[in-house]
Structure formats: structure tokens, C-alpha cells
Picture: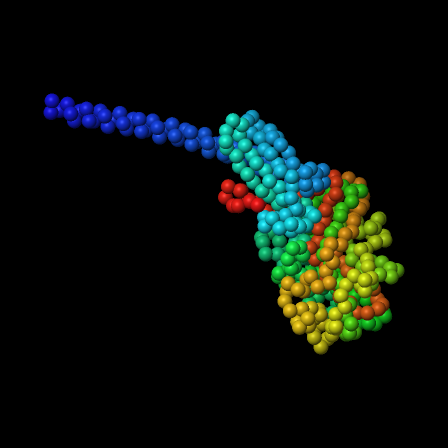
Length: 387
């Protein structure tokens, strides 16, 4: 009898342990199945992002209801649903995305379970997305500091760039003194003009089809200089797109394909003629009581007169039109064309008052056919809050 009680106790403990182990094993199986379903749901949501990216890149669906899709089957028992695209970023502030971008939400799920994964992504079909559309010095890996170059003739450190650019001017004023393409006709001399040509090595190359139309959208700012400056400060790279035009300001764009054929805004047959985005500055820009002179090292007026432009956030928006400028390029040749080089240029007519022009935030959008799109930013809504 003295041995029976310990034996029964040992048996009871063993039975209890077996039950606990059994429950743990069953829970492990359930947890593993749930984890597997969660992974399947994640992969399904990623498939939905890839589908929306393809649609957006080729122009078959604009940002909006065209990207929505309900219960699209990925594989046995897995589906995804895509909500209509939005033009707001992760701050959900209206109008914060340019035309080349779109925010989509995709929910992936496994049939017969409660497992779902929600992802949001900002899609970008700007063909220059990998080539610094803001023309700034790059901060990330994979972009050389020479991704944008420009010619200048005045020998100054300012050259054909000015650090009064900024992000897309939307709900709030831009913040940083980022770089913008810059041209100046510093004096009132009738024979003197101003011009600047920026060149970007496209990384990675994109491919479009001959005959396809590409839309170019860009921010620009133009001001008259009410005091004539120094002719020595004129930026003149020698490129005159349309010397017969009477417009004060001409902004033009071009691409060069790997076969050596140029396609330009409004032009045909190796850019003859170029039809630039053009306007008379008196009707489109501000007049500033300023000049650009050798005394001030030929600095742009925004830097030369800080009393007028108090900080970087005001540099960019002063005289900036609410809407972006827009031009088009018809790709020359036939069949697929690989594009390794892009050009953006400004020409200031050789007559009239001194003036300055800035160009920034360039979007190059393939309207149809072969296209390119990238995921500019994305988040897993289970980890980061999604608007």
C-alpha cells in the first residue's frame, strides 16, 4: 500500500503530461496551418500589386476605378481584391501624387479561412523614376552623381543648375533647396540669348514602340529681371530649338534611342523641327527687382537677393504655375526602341528684358503600348498603419 500511492501519482502525472503534449502538438499544427495560410494570403496580395503595376504601366488602366478587381483567383483557394486607385500618398492628403503615380490597396485571402493580408503600394510609371526626375543629386545606391549633367558657358559654380527646386508643389510649400534645371538671360541686350540643356543617362533603360506618344509633364517657374545684369552671366550652350519663334521662353524635351535616332517634343525625323512648350514671360511669371551680375558671381536672383526670398520653401513656389506644363514626344522609327538618354532644355529668346527660368520634377509617361512602372513605396498594413 505504501508503494501504490506513489505509483498512482506517477501514472497521473504521466497521463497529464501526455494530454498537455497532445494539446501542444495540436496547437502547433493549427498554428502552422494558420501561418501557411497567412503566407499564402501575403503572396496573393503581392500578386495583386504586380497585376495593378502591369495595368498602370501600359496605360490600360488609369489611376482610379480601372485598377479595381474583385476576387481574382491566384491559385487553388487563394484570391485577391484590389480597390480603386487613389491620387493621395500615405499621408492621405489630397493631390499629393503626380500624374505618373497611383496608390493602390490589395487584400489577399485564403478561401474558407479568416486569414487576410492587406498591402498598399504607390505605383510609379514615370519613365525617369530611376533617373532622378527632380534632377537632384541622388542619395540612394545605384544612381551615379552624374545621372544629370548640363552645359553652361559662364564658368560659374552655379552653371546650369540652381538650388531653388523642391518636391511637387501641392498642399504645402516645398521644403528643401533641391536642384532644378536653370537658364538665365541676364541682360537686356537684343542680340544675347540664354539657353541650358540638361542630359540624363536613363537608368534603367526603358523600351517604347516607334510611333508611340510619350507625355512630358514638368514644373517650371519664370521671372522677369527688372534690372539689366551682365551679359557675361548669360548661360548659352549654343542650342537654339526654334529661333524663329517669338516666344520669350521655350522649354523642350528629347529622347535618344540606342539606334541613334532622336525624338523631340512636337518634332519628327530626328527633331526637325522641334516644337517647344513656349510662352511669353510677361503673361506667365513674376517680375523681380533684381539682376544677375558678375559682381555677385552671376548667382541666380533667388540667391542674390535673400531679402526677397526668405527661405527655401518660398524659392520654388514664387511664380510657379499651379498646374504642370505639358508637352509630347512621338517616338520615331518602328518597333521597340530602347531609350538610354533623355534631354531637357530651356531657351530664352534673344530680345527683350532679362529673365530666368527653372524646370523641375519631370514626368515622362508612356500613354500606351510598351511601358515601365515601379513600386515607389509600399507597406504591409499589418505592420504599418495604412490610410
